[in-house]
Length: 198
View (cartoon, rainbow, N blue to C red):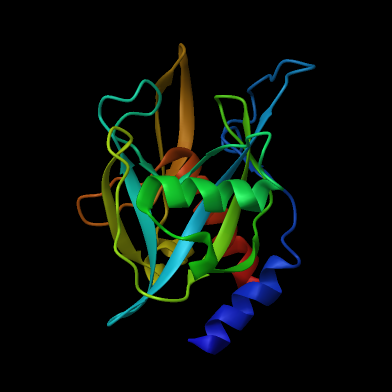
């Protein structure tokens, strides 16, 4: 396990270019002068009996934005956050009850631009000690673990599409059991697979 974590830490130092929700849609024309809001999300790695897994959340069905979707714990940067890593750690504490002091930050992925005008920095962290998940009522319906080997295997990714704002939009998906992991979450995970393969 330690060798794997060291490999992640090393590869994240050379993380390359950013990604976006528009990567698979090259004909999309983005407005000039658009303002992107900074946000941070945490990809919490946990040790299980079956190896390393990644914790993800299922957003509450009643939320205004992205209800029911699979996501990393995270959110927009607040003025009081020291940096974007602090944002991701704070949000994970609020959303799933993960104490920031229990996270060994391995590094960050390149920022990801979303269709909702966020500039999201994924923070990769190893959870040092087991903890009791406490899902934030009203925001998180479920917290679940997916084997890290599954989401870091590029062969498990598919490209699908749907109509969005009158146009056909393509996106990555990496299904796992009953969980449909797609959109920005899948694209950020796909970017991670590219980095560790180098």
